[in-house]
Amino acid sequence: MAEAAQARMGADIGVIGGSGFYEMPGLIDARPIELTTPYGAPSSAVTIGSIEGRRVAFIARHGKGHRILPEELPSRANIYALKSLGVRQVIAVSAVGSLRVNIEPLHAVVPDQIIDRTTGRPGTFFGDGAVAHVGFADPFCPALSSILADQCEASDVRTHRGGTLVVVNGPAFSTRAESKMYRQWGADIIGMTATPEARLAREAELHYASLCFATDYDVWHADEEDVSAELVVQNLQRNIAKARDIVAAAVHAAAEAGTCGCEDALAEALITPRDLVPEATRRRLGVIVERYWGSLDDAANAAMSAMTEGSAR
Image (cartoon, rainbow, N blue to C red):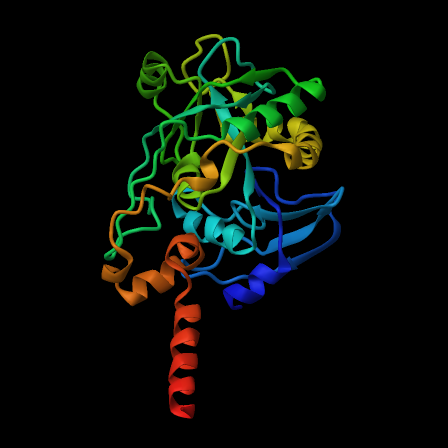
């Protein structure tokens, strides 16, 4: 499907559902659509519908039936698909392990920092003749994160505002030595999917916030059960209804979010002059840079119109 056709379908806010969060109940007039992007297909069909007048685009991060490993996630396709639909804000939901005694299983964390320990994942839309360096000092949108935390607290979920999320490749869980090391580094929670997702969202100038639910204590806590897939799924099921309610409330509340700079992330980040970027690269970047470099299709149409006018004379 062409980008122009995708954009006409329209959505204001995107939701990326993590482990256990495979659908978005409560969407009015919901319908799944299959999208294509220059970076391949998203993790799942994108379900578009409305919540209290806001158009929402939902993607199941791990696909239907949880079939995609963290390191296999098509994060560029997911973020590009949301951007092409007109999405400006993204709420990402994730299951995480706790690295702190006070962050107990079933607690919610809205992190404000990331330590990236992943390797081998495509982490940028740029390259192939186009260079950009976005600011990433504060990887989560502070305005959207605050709204998300407000809705968590309103739902009577024990909520931790802020915190450092260390992201690892997986799919295996940590060794005890690694888990203890991450605690020494100052990390508060551990997950497998926030990068490169958050970085790509910044390049796409999207407001991105993460709702993390602790399911376990990883493997550092001597008096608690070691993390296992069974334990994670068990606690996910206990949290999932609350998570959906919180996200639905945040979708509505986020309509009043102010500006914070995320929406202009590329304004001073694009280094390569537009005219030096290969056409194939510009075409692939598409909606990511269209605001600054214009559309190649528009440029081609303008050139064709000029040629036609010249011929008429």
